[in-house]
Length: 516
Image (cartoon, rainbow, N blue to C red):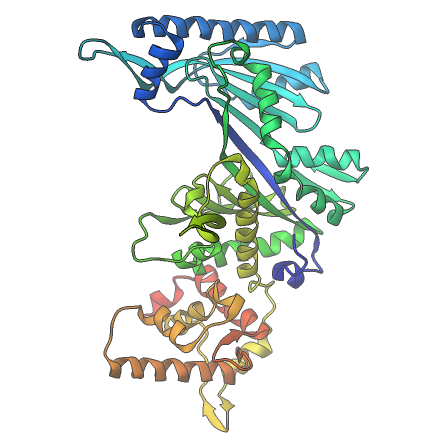
């Protein structure tokens, strides 16, 4: 991760290392059979069989795939299990690994029943027709210990169109790269609790999206699908897309006590202060009036193995949780890439130009996934940099409760726990303003809403906000950014305002309501 990360700079005394790395990545491969009309023409003119004979032909191919899987398992000395009902496949594979202690090669093949996209025969005018639908079918899971990628699996649907899914983990790949480079580390599950050379590890992690993925995926597909070597597919090959990509930023703390002291405050700050507009900003978007979707925040503090907060925008999300009470992990999960805009070269009016376009799912766009998720994690951590260990002293609290002077004018003291004061505090501590500051009109829009108002009401609001900004500046909680009309929260302001909000909402949230 970049060395200018504000969060890492602020807590440098408590942080050992920061590592950004891809975690779960799921690829999918599709054979080029699109819609129903294309399928029927292919059966009629390329396969040259009757449409009513297509399903029996598919059943033969399905059995050939299952027989091939059994043969592969027998040759490798790996178990082949046909599972009925619900099973935790990962736990079963881990049990097999503990019992067999394999270092590489095929670990196991699991055959399960799942509902997937396939083909059915329908009545038609004059002749039957084939149509895509979802039906239960046998699905094969090949679990490998790959020398380069560690534990991974290839999922193959045994019925037409024989879609393939490949799962890899970036942390497993990075661990094997560090072993080759003789870099010391301690790995626990999918995280590193110790890194002897974090800078070198980060340089290796940056290579993951640049690997020759099409070549790698074709190799795995050829191992599990022998039908590709037959004549009927012709020159057709799988088209590979990224179905899901997770990118995590791990902040490794020196001790569990340091993270345990800070983490509850990070959760509370993210829950109380990050609005829908903030979350969209973290993901590189703006809140547009025509935005059609939901922005949700879900915080679970009674979750095992630890508390976590998830911000969801449609089917993409940002998560924050702790790993083993020692690592703070920020994770961006991309399931709908077209919700993000990236710069791409396009032909416009006869000229090639760089334009902002929706991000595509093709595996060639992996570097775009990497850049978008990395930037989202950095924005999120920068917004959390305002949170601090409880550090407001009694002397500081007493001082801001007393009157102060600003430009030779007397300003009142602050009532830190009053609900109206707290509303202003939360407004100036917005996450997306900590990067570039805020203006008078930004704060007015946040406090009073963006609706249309008269010129007189607008002037009155501007004066009201200006007076409160002067009040906070008089107490040293705000500072004006030089040569601009923007303001930022000072270090003293971060400590006092965050402490006041924490006390109001966590220590005695109902006390003032009961008095009122």
